[in-house]
Image (cartoon, rainbow, N blue to C red; front, side, top):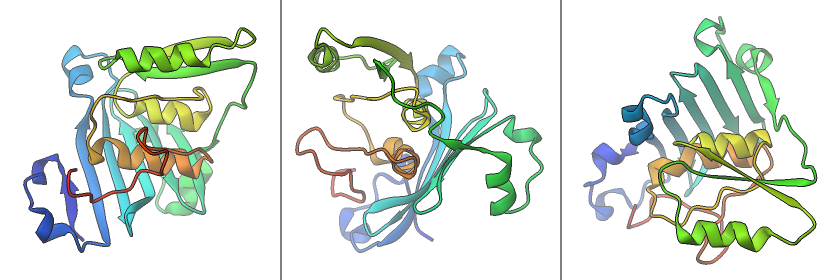
Length: 198
């Protein structure tokens, strides 16, 4: 099974453009968080089929929390993952809690990057203010921002800074399996993968 990751970013597009099924891997997402030792770094793995993520797994080693999602199955969270004694898919699902955990409420929760806050993100947050709803902004590192959206703890995760496919594939799979969506800012279309510029 082919793998696309930052370590293989130099694979020419001509050599990978016909791949319809592959793994998208980020072995250390949140390098800045890892260096700061705040625990908000993750390992991300997504299965891409026909340009879209159909399954994703995000593990936060310092938090010992495992998130996973699969199209048609749903999204789940497993805390104390290293202590879980699971052998197969069914046991994994049974040991986990289904996402989202939180239903939408009167407060609009926005998760923003701890390391990449931009003027565009601040403008997006200001655009949500309508005088009726309270806006709560939470900072988080790495792909844990996607996990907060999947959990229902965040309604939006605006991201305007450049990002790579391995940064978003697993998170998108989990958010979509939880019933959410991940859209490109430029055209409002669903993120797709194995593009010429990854």
